Image (cartoon, rainbow, N blue to C red; front, side, top):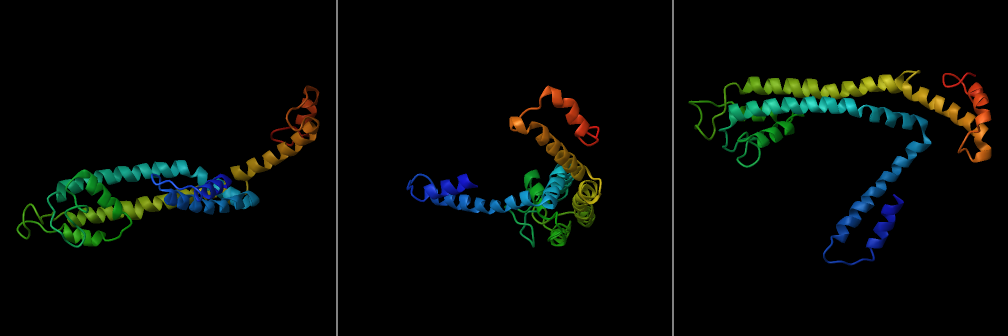
Length: 226
């Protein structure tokens, strides 16, 4: 943070036409907001909370991978059912929001994964022969089944699975009295206190061989024998 502030200050005195100095300075000013993160080092509860969130990242990535895989399958089906639908409607437009290819279908499904406008998109895709113009406004009569299944799986199951994973991690690493984070912190503090006691003469850098036995005898269990 200090480096960002110094660079920001230096950029104010630099004038170069080829470089967007103003934009770089704005980004560095925004980075100053991260100074609030320093507060975490003064609160053990906040540190434990951040550690719990960091331990949830692996499980969240697994859920995210599953969500992207399901979006992949629905995108392929969307191109198959609604690939000819190009006429502008409530949500469908010829340039971006359509199922003409896999990429656009994937982005469109990703956009409605939160549940926004999925019903309007369903009505855009529901017309079929003879109530549409083939090659422009024809969708599929299976549109209600497609979109209801999509919303049920993605919005009501997979997105809630993210919340479930976070809650499970909080119950395991934060809520329980004997959770791993509190246990590690307690053991580390005990080890640190004992280590300082026996290594003060050497600036806490090394432990003499003749003090090893006494060190472990004074170190509380489970790391020692006290």
